[in-house]
Image 1 (cartoon, rainbow over the protein chains, first blue to last red):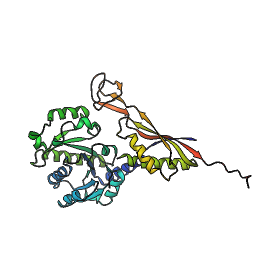
Image 2: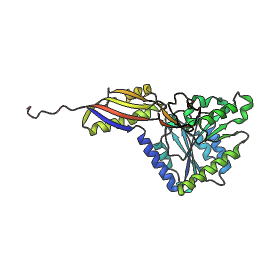
Image 3: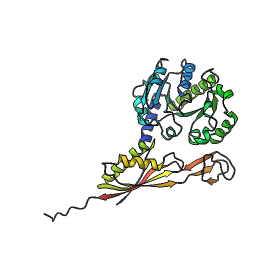
Image 4: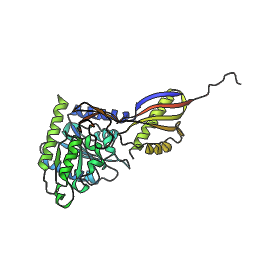
Length: 222
Length: 123
């Protein structure tokens, strides 16, 4: 016997993600889903954001890794709440994992939650976590061809950050070509340049983050 | 690797649907995948064969239907199929478009076996 099913396989994740979004809206909290390949500098970029915005924004961080607590310990050392999710082999975070992490945070005391997704440019883009905004980091050391190889993630984010910009002199990274390519893929997303080593671009990154967090609050509370 | 989570969801949905229909076994599952998703059907098949063991879907055959991508150009309104990574409108070369189809992932249908009707005249 044939049964018409017509059911979205991602429906369970989407429904939990919707629940997360609703919960954050009730508490007026913005959530940023930060994605990048391993080693692009996600944790360093988050630490720069903490340094630059902590006097104005109340932050928490959700760290997604296959294993270890290295990243959440680094964030906690800055006296910022950090929840570590170990996916145990899974290459991305799911909405249910984030929902469980939110249980451990005092949402009333927060403006912004930054999620550091598992290092990967493919899978995380497919899973809605209930975030307000999505962002991808590309680093100079990875080469300017990343958007050609992983176009979907560059298409679907709200902002793009080029990290390790201090390495431009030592790598064959063509910044003009990179900007042209991502502009074609995603004309609305701002492309910001950053160096976590010498703090170049930190102001622009922190201003974007603050505007995003506050804008999202206005959206949520209006 | 993210196909593992997807395959778990597939098994959950088909068992729920089959049980609701009073079936005892799932024989075939038809899954529709948009051509712009990053889900690999070989990988789903691999996980399915492992995860379905010992369930009512053990041994079920998996069929995949690819759904082609369709987009509407924001500049000139042309309808086209964005086929490669660098989609641009074949009419006006604009890269800005609304993707209407191509990112789907759903279960279209299942084929199930039902229990043979018990003949109460026996015994």
